[in-house]
Length: 243
Ligand code: GLP
Image 1: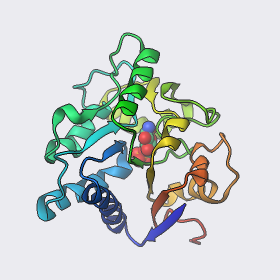
Image 2: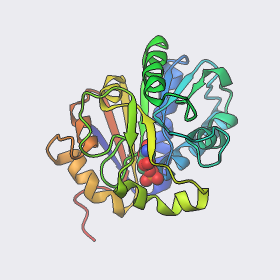
Image 3: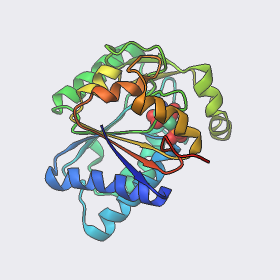
Image 4: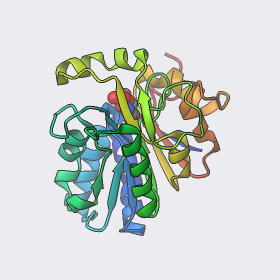
């Protein structure tokens, strides 16, 4: 893992957006793995700016989001679909038919997870996967204890994750319990990974992720085994910093 520590959140956003831009410039038909959450909002803002001001194009790109809440209508403002279109996809020159998320309204969620995995494979696999991290080390919705050998599947969202995001869920008017998520094995198959973390609240979990044992108890720790992962942090989230 390569770790980059920036002083401010704005610098994190720009450095992360540049990683994505570099991917698109070197391979315009890249398959991007996207995620949602408060951490990546600024990254997408910076990326939209690079698109508008520097001509970074998504015209040939394909995207797959890492997760979606089960039972969530796609047009609901709390859905991952709504947010990724609002924050990024509607603001760049990507073709709508090239943007994919699991169908939160599928009749059979497990089947949808399997089909989603197949769609990624048919697209040639993910070139660059963008990830945030939960306070308990979850990536996508792979909560602590999830076996590393899971492909896309239906995950039960942990009580800890529900309470960490309680304010967001309350404001969005949603009460999710499950999600369709790429599994750890799906994430480990992606060619490059960009993990972003910000703020002092994430420092402890980043310490475990970067330097602790590789264990399903800290799902993100598996990224220590990935051959091409860059982690971009602000100084508050960087382990080793004293208050
Ligand atoms: C969510 C998502 C993750 C995201 C994480 C962190 O629940 N499933 O994909 O990375 O939690 O979210 P935030 O960036 O808001 O801290």
